[in-house]
Length: 288
View 1 (cartoon, rainbow, N blue to C red):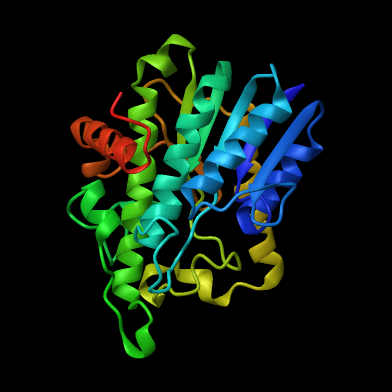
View 2: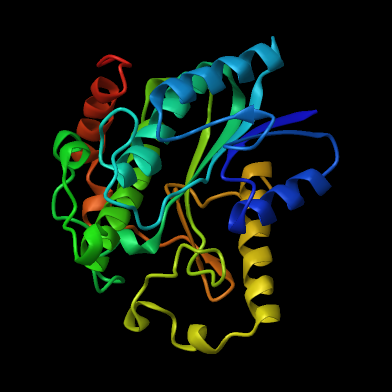
């Protein structure tokens, strides 16, 4: 029996992935979400800790074979997280960082960790690039620019989203380089599923940020894209797809899985390690 823990498995890409995982034999899938059997609110550090305790109590001595960190907030309101942090950074990065830290000791040898990132982390792809810095304290305390009616402007919201996806990639890099991951031969992957119409994440994107045919896609094509991206994520989590040596960034491009180099900032080991240490302080995990 393979045990898989997953966030963001009730809608969009995650729902398609969960269907694929549940269709596989001998799989025990535990999904964390607002309305799941084990509730999880990624905007609350206390909720994440409670979810992790419930998972470990449920599993008892059973080890985790795969951890799929897929949930994400696209464009936030002006609100902050329960803990007072900027919402996008708190949900997309800090929440998953903390969950990874809490569940990592229960990962089996040769277990797989997949974090959903995005090619928007790369200024070469996105017309609205991430911030040119990755400072956890500054990102956590940032006030996003507001437009009319108090809502976050597109540029500010999208920049925060792209930066949080860069943080996901850097977190995967830092964890893969850790002694803990190396000792147990853990496989760590940062997965970009590409633009998937209909999932909600791309609803505020400007036309120039979308793949050329995206605006004219019908519902059947949209569903095919969603299911294909979900199948790839499931295959990564199940170990059916193995990264080439030295690569952890997987990018689905027009239906084909590629293993490109991430952005220049995404390759910075020093930036990844500093983000890891600062995130430990912000989540109360200490500086180890």
